Amino acid sequence: MAEASYPEDLKYHAEHDWARIEGDQATFGITWYAQDALGEVVFFDPPEVGTSVSKDEAYAEVESVKAVSDVFAPLSGEIVEVNAALDESPEKVNQDPYGDGWMVKVRLSDPSEVDQLMDVAAYKELLQAGS
Amino acid sequence: MPVQYEGIRQEHVAVRTGAGVFDVSHMGEIETSGPQAEDFLQRILSNDVTRIAERGAQYSVLCREDGGVLDDLFTYRLGHDRFLTVTNASNHERDLAWFQEHAGGFDVDVSDAHERWAMLAVQGPEARAAMERIADGELPARMRTADVPVAGVACLVCGTGYTGEDGVEVLIPPDGATAVWDALMEQGVTPAGLGARDTLRLEVCFHLYGNDLSEDRNPIEAGLAWCCKLDTGFIGSDALRGLEPDQTLVPFAFTGPGIPRQDNPVHTEHGEGVVTSGTLSPCLEVGIGMGYVPVADEAPGTELTVDVRGKPREAEVREKPLYRKETSG
Image (cartoon, rainbow over all chains, first blue to last red; front, side, top):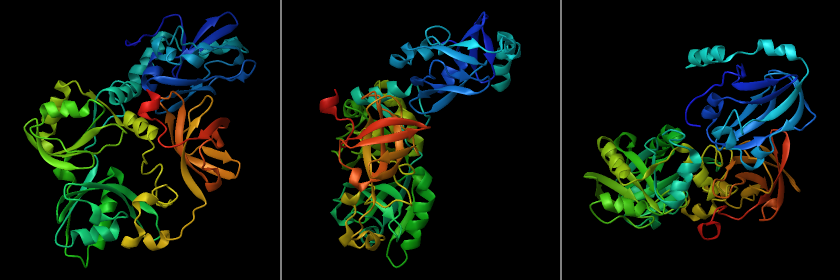
């Protein structure tokens, strides 16, 4: 994905992660900004299904040829699914960060945490303030 | 030089299959001339400087008295009594001070030539062909140098490189560097950055100072005994004579998932080691690296476990180079 994009229907975390909320579950991934800063993703090291993740803490690692980056959980909960396709094709994180490049699905332990996340307007402001 | 222009893997593949150019102007140069230039360099460089023919090139290391490695260097013999030594950017000032400090007692002139040269490395199977189209004269053979005008600029062209591919390194007066770069762009040569430079050199197991070489390591354990001619009496040779190191630098590849990184601990059957360079190999598509392991674990095929941020990853000692053109495509 060559052009920056930030979907309206997602919630954003300051560490450049997104969450798509579906009831008491959410899908996590990294934003266009994060994948662009990282460069070509060549390896995704997922957590195991059944493990707990805590808001603001690292739950996985993503690597480009040159560098390793932690992936932070925007919300707390239990991993119910990991994107197995990233094992063979980690470049999906670059090509489609909000679609095929999703990372994990989580059963939320505290859905009220969603209120602490940013909407797209606030996240875009954060990006502008940083650049 | 940026880490990347378009993408590390793309630039890496361009150098393996076509031609790429690296702006390595950050590298330093030291010129040594005078009646005793050869005697002086023989004293401080590890290799046998008397064996560099006029217009020839040679790899060596610069050692402390105790054998610790200060830098690894290429030296070109431009005339009988005139040499140009290429240094690593981060070591240049220290190398220069070392040269000057030890030049006393020799009839030589040591000068900092860093500001006199920009440097472009043009590498890949198509590199020479691209250079030939913009050069006015014959390019030097491998490990040779020649004065050749390139894009109308008087250059010193060297048949050397750091990628395992054919190609040249071009030393250019700084005000002519843009003209040479632009001419290479017109020939379709791909700009390549520091990231690809690192993955390319690691696939062919060339040492990187600061990773695989340091003052805390000697050239014998680093696998560089071949360029340490102890009989020449160079500084450090006494410390290296008869040395039997506990560890040795080996190339390895992961047999499962993961990417090794510098400073990852290594566990072997006979003890502990450490990764000094690691990356994902764009050509082999597995994690590769080099690291120091107990000498008893140096044989190709030996299994290693690399601790990648707390996760044990399986690896195997391999032969040099990790990537070989014939077998790898």
